[in-house]
Amino acid sequence: MTTTGKTNGNGTRTWEAPGPGGWRKDDSHMPDPIARYTMDMFIPGFKSGLQTAFREYGFLLSHFDTAVVAGRGYMRARPIGAPEKPSAPPPRFVFKLLFLLHPEMRLRKKNAARALAEKLWRKDADRWFAELREPMRQRLIRLQAVDPHALGEPGLREHVAALRALWAEGIHVHFRQSSAYAVAVGDWLRHTMLWTGASAAECLKVLVTSSPASAVTVGLLDRLAQSVAAVPAAQAALVDLRGDPTGRLARLREASTEVTAAYDAFMGEHGWRLVTGFDLVDLTLHEMPQLVLSSILARQGALTAPPAAAEGRAAALRDRVGAPKRAEYDALLEEAKYVHGLRDDDVGITFCWPEGLMRRGLLAAGASLAKKGRVRSPEHLLDASPDEVDALLGGATTPSADTLAARNAERIENGKVEPPLELGERELPPPDDYFPPECLRLMRAVMTYIANFDLDAAERPAATAATLGGHGVSSGRYEGTARVVRGPQDFGKIEKGDILVAKVTSPAYNVVLPLLGAVVTDKGGSLCHTAIVAREFGIPGVVGTGDATSRIADGARIVVDGDTGIVEIRA
Figure (spheres, rainbow, N blue to C red):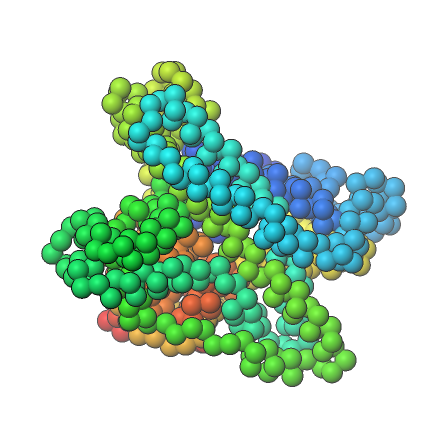
């Protein structure tokens, strides 16, 4: 099946599905075309991590097929034993027979029952916080201490290989753990909406403060802001708008030993993490000195109060649950709170930090290769595959500089088109009564979670000439200046009190949130990263507007209502 979709406003284009069945674009990670190196790293860890989790939790999915269309990733879910080409589900008795006779189906049913009985999501969270997190963080700190620009090509080759191994491990861990919060939060959310009639956005406000990693930058940033305010020379460098941002930061850092320690603590933890997205073409905080200065200044007169405690909301929501179900509600909420913060905690260490260090290493390698004419620009190395980079640092002459330059140009050109969200033919799942109860419960939990990661456009309020409709995911009403961010280059213009308007945000944006009065996105739902972080910071948030980045002009005056989901364009 072919799909006709818009390009960059100059016409239409026919899109072919990359294979049989139904395919969906991964907008949460890949809203824009992604560099070759990123894509080649992402796909194996994504597939292996989910495949491991599916088996452990007893999901009836084998894996996700992946494909690249116009530089974006597309996915197709593959149930166990399903044929390559989509077809109608078998009769119910055949399906039931499979759970009795098929070894893998029998195992999945057994694992599903065990996952529920043993609360496997808790074990995943405990393993991360007690066993995996700190060793991975220490490895990152050791690799961060290496200056790749001081290495020759043999040393660079070894350094990049070490980063690649750690990042690959991190991607696998992140996606393996994704089932933990999807099951626990999705199960609580599904039952709570069913019992109370509340929307997902209403329910999820109960989880405020249960994802501390979403606002983790604030502690170290506040310490830095306070130390700068106490030292006149540091404060003078902060507010001196005439100076070069890099020079101002250097003067600020050197103003006192206290400021130096606070600066090094903040930048040591967050400076080499990607800030503007999930791709190697995105920027780290070290590459945006003006943003660092703006963040410090913003926290000296913090816009956002700490988010309101969730106890009152939880009590009000609990009152809407019928008395016979309240004990079950309490138990489900406890599980959701236990793992809700896992996603934003692990993604900083498994993704944003190793990827930022990988960017630094690859650009250093690219600079070395550019001196010898083997790449035209250091950035072009990001469009090579991991194996190609390893070969080039080992003395190979292919791919050529012309080939990498052409790939870079193609990726940029692909950014001018917008492929459809779905390609191919939708595949109908079997009816619910085909599944054992334990498998059905897990499936419904995960589907509830996924459905609220990027909500249906039909559910948002109707737009008018002066308003946009989206999903209000974080309470409050705020008026301010819109800063439309379409790429890494746009982050430098964000100032204290601005309203971020973006296609979608990632956990990497957490460092930007202390500057903001509100946030608006084209995509997303009540469980997207934007929504979670906005709730944790206590700023109004509206997601899933569809076209905020195209309808709102940079610098426009807008009002964001995080309760109604309405964005007013004033001027």
